[in-house]
Length: 625
Ligand SMILES: Nc1ncnc2c1ncn2[C@@H]1O[C@H](COP(=O)(O)OP(=O)(O)OP(=O)(O)O)[C@@H](O)[C@H]1O
Image 1 (cartoon, helix red, strand yellow):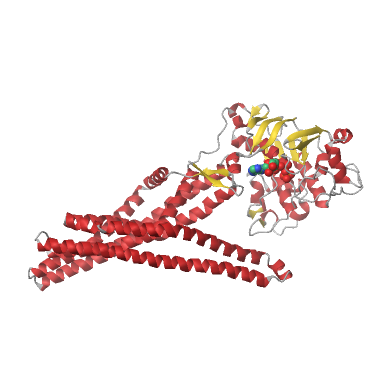
Image 2 (cartoon, rainbow, N blue to C red):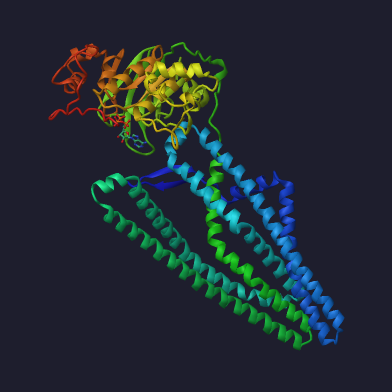
């Protein structure tokens, strides 16, 4: 039950699962069953509203028969009163039914949304890594929006219309089965009209969504980059681009309007076919004395009553189908199992504060069905040892760091902490014991204190301040207007990349993991910021078994051991001094990084200066600013 998506390079990636129609229905039924009173109330009101709508045509038929039989004015007025009463009742029941159904739908959707979010946040890291966050964000955002839209706008009316059609068709057959069959003559015409419409509407809507998305993107681009737009005087070009995208979106909207009109004509044609068939059948049946004129009148009115609900069902069919598809994607995530817990984790103690050995053996690792990116890697980090990973961009450093952190599972191989495979520790314990600081640090919207307490909810304000001080954040954090209560992240104070990195290191201190994996590449090598961050990282990882992806070689020079990676393998390893003395890859990397002033780290002779090395086949690792 997984679906695939074709990436730009033509490769098919396994995304998150999508539920089958049967599973989707089962999940919906289970949700409705959890709200028995609301479900029963919505069902009863909607059925009663549809049934009340049948009263007027039926009474009109009786009226016709009574008039033919020479009825009194009082009787006719009595029937008129019944019609008025039934219409009022139908209106009230419809309004109440729609309100209760919308409430039911909203409640079910809210529960589903919560479960999707819960499952998404508890997904095993490997699944999340494989699926990518884009798919999850699309499901939690776009899919929820599509379903919400249908549930709050057309959903109750759609269900009401469906019930009306079923009850009216039953009423038609109850009058006389031949009248019922005559009404069914319209069905093929309706089916053809619907097929015609769906074949065209879905591609149109897809194109419209793309076009409106591009228009929004063009506007957002221009507004976000307003200073640059002005600096280069490209206002006209941007306005022209937005106008171009708007024109495309407008043309598509007009075409969709046109499509609806043409669909409406086809629906009218089907209505004509059905009504003509019912009238003809009624005429023949009355002529042969098989039904009364009143019954034939009721049949024609019943069929006429179908126009609106059938039209609504057909017109809304595409959005309901789309909502069904979105619902299946939501149910797919909500039905995912949570992260596997320890198999025999209880026998493993979490020795917080106690350095532990970590061993990784990767015979082979590849992403999905891609090429091998790691091969024959065997690495043991001794308790408390600080190991730096060095190598050219694409050598496999981040992949190995992800495997060590338990975010990625090696295709063939294993990772164990204190001799216990990570798989046996369980996701939750792995996360408590091994912390990863990746290249993209996320600052959550909220107060600085909340952001830090993600790592340790029980930390006091003094603990938080101490952690920030230890990673060298004192200078900026002490000047914040509201101190730890200052809002940061989206909508709050924006932190620089280096400050966000310090925040991540402070979180690491508070989380107090046994093993720290650092894959940060924030500051430009040689800058004062880089030295501050190196010091902060050293403080945060002191006493922990640490693997650090050394985007700046100053990080490697202070490590206990340096491991040089090349094309997915370990090319050489040793201490900084040993590797320099060996004169291999590391020493060439180091020389090219330090040239023209190869001063050893720690010496107060100025910051190391990175320098491109023409002719050298060892590229410096990429630095993300
Ligand atoms: N999520 C992914 N899906 C597919 N291939 C990937 C993925 N992440 C990395 N790779 C590939 O794996 C190989 C190793 O990449 P990795 O990021 O581990 O190298 P790196 O040494 O950390 O490079 P950098 O210093 O640029 O971050 C590269 O060929 C890369 O294209």
